[in-house]
Length: 350
Image 1: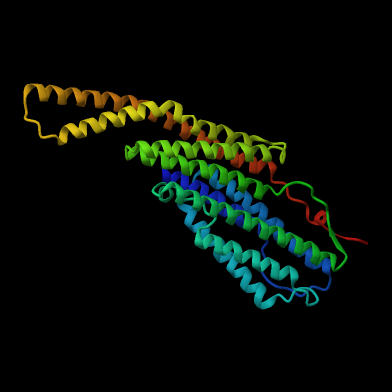
Image 2: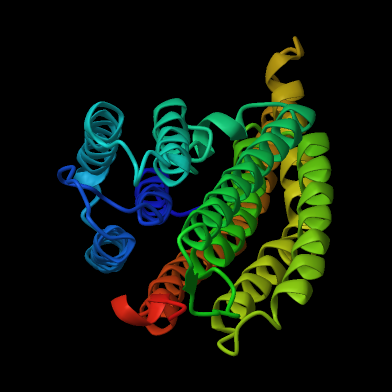
């Protein structure tokens, strides 16, 4: 498995900025004479923050500045809390209509809560790997549920924004494309699930747990099937299928460990157990018992070395695939993050 700290920080950075980059920013409150001025100012802030944070996300992932992870989270939280304070205390909406303001504050608060409680931050591989499989399954389901709820909140916000604009005979340019941030987040959760299962596999291997190994491989196979189904659903959402394909390739590789490792692992653990039994026996030390012990040690070392030769080779390939996935993810975001121009998105019906 790739260095857990490296992996955790990379995905944490992706997740932090993806969620925060959904949100517009108001540095101050103003009194607006026209709805056009109100919406244009809204658009400028929204588009600026989306693009700047998206670019920031890509640059951090590529340069792998892991030490900035916590600082990034704190900065985003402080920024959003400041925005909510300003809007709550000084923004009176437009002509007393606070629908847009209130919906935005609610979405902002949802993001703040998620960053503070960690429900949408995918950085807990070490913790998850020590839990039972039912507990892991429950935690993964909760994280995915929180993700879906977050984007449902975003959709509610977008609907409220459209309703608000229509009250003043404003309309939005129709945009039929899928929300790239939501699409990316759903791809990320698939990648996260498979890595949690794989980290669990590494944990039981270190514990020399044969049943745990079998159960973990079964869950990896189950997770792979889920990924196959969902990526099949996602593949038509963007012409660029690189991220979709990367998840499929990675899931197939992780699942393929069963064929390469199962027999070697079981034999290695059997030899380990045989050696422990011999060490704990109270047989008198004779030339025959010494020969038996030495042969058992020799067999154990041979089986152990054979297993780890294959296992370590898999880890090397896995690390490269993990890094390739991150590169694919950042490239996908750069190539597909299209933002509407200010005056195309908001226009009057006149």
